[in-house]
Image (cartoon, rainbow, N blue to C red):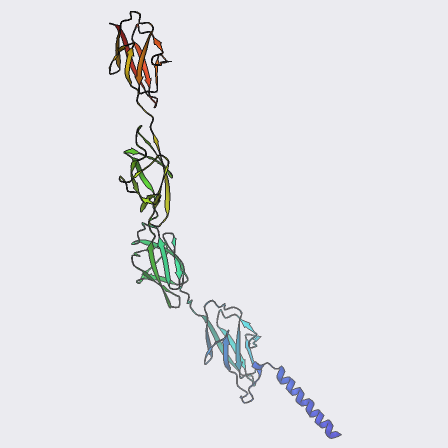
Length: 389
């Protein structure tokens, strides 16, 4: 019975010692083979980056962008405890501010200590990208190491100024520093930009510039048979002289486009005839393939003819000389005579009274003014004098 009690006592003691050892932090457990004066940091890392331990110094370089405040170190020691100032350190748990060097104090079982100065630096930025690029307002397309830009027709590609944004520290072309929105370059051939990061690494971009085809497609001058047209936006109006053969008129025109057609028939200035009885649509095609339609409307001017071509009283013919007409009659009373006449105008009047050939009587006792009105509204006066034979 006493032997059983003794065995039970030994078992309890063994369990108590095991629990005590498990409860102790691993960083505080002294290696069973170490000496009582051991007080070293054996390994040290932050965020997976191992520190270089040299005598009493530990150095680490963390990736660019890492915040130095609140970093947690993982470490192993051969001593019994580690402190920073008065704060006990637990591997993988305790955070510290590494803005400035941090001193770790490792204590041995015999009470001796060993200080380690941990210095953390941040690696230089390795970024070296061009994230946005344009030339004279034309946005570039960035694909890998290539940038393609299409600038408008007529652009002077021998002296274009780029606008760009970059994550690098410097941008150069042939060792010439480039400043966004300031430095001009000749883009006749592809140009290589070299972006250098803060850490010295480089990234090359090849910029290729192409010029867009001409988009101009205007009719800048138009005339028919020497009569200038009036160009208003997409419409051209031409008034040709009375009597013109509008079924076969030849246009003279100037255009900024590459091709001019009517119903897919190519038009050549001063050569191609067209029927303008109805409005005609000209299609001007630019070098880039875009189109501009113009509607040409032709009207014929009203007749301006206003002549009296024949005049007689009774059987006696008048003599027309310029704007004078002279007639001789056997009738002694000239106060109510009826004249016969032909005219190219649309109406004839005397003192505002419309005259009808062979119908309207007139007092010819004195000279009479006949007014002939043309279709276009113009007038011609004739002075008629009637004498006795």
